[in-house]
Length: 285
Image 1 (cartoon, rainbow, N blue to C red):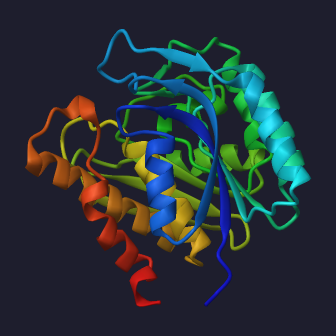
Image 2 (cartoon, rainbow, N blue to C red):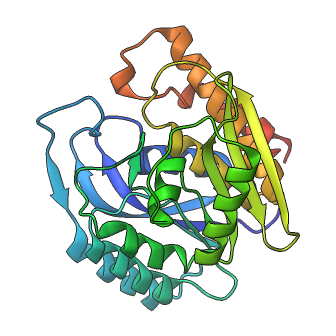
């Protein structure tokens, strides 16, 4: 068998709900990846649609975990960061990368900051600048459209967009991050939704669009990012990884809609994990 790859996932964890670590751990594990985690915070539920949730900040624990890993001589094939609760945490994560990553470690940053044109209320107006610095350290970034506008320090514009607009945004993001870029939430009409990719190694800009399923489903961004990383670690090209992530996210949304559950609970990605394993070729080994 091939050597098992190891990923460090750095996110918050919600004790109930489907986002961040509760999504990353099963998705990456289904891909055959040894997935280690550094929780940045612990919440009783995710924040979408719930009130009164508890929140425990774990900022002081992040670096000690990384230092202990380093003392054990652990190697990581990827470091994957998601929601970070403060500017201080973005600076700490940069130090974590310096501590646990080697020149062969892929660093993927999902610059979680906002959605639907708005910065999340937990962040100050200076947070995007801090996230911009972290994105500069990444080999792959996965912003949604709102986050892309924030990273570019531009006023948000609702879509539909044009290919020329998206190409310009990819160029702007490439000036921040010299690695691969996957821009999600891209659409050129009201019937489709997907992503645009830019690979600096080839210079290729490509689009991955799928039929839009109406409604808002919590956790889809984390499902997409987790599947994207899983596919990349399984050797997929950037475009093929983006396509696999789109397909699995759409499948998860369709399953959720069919089951007619309370949408606050999050997208049902678990039901189709065997399908994900087949998509990634993991059930053939």
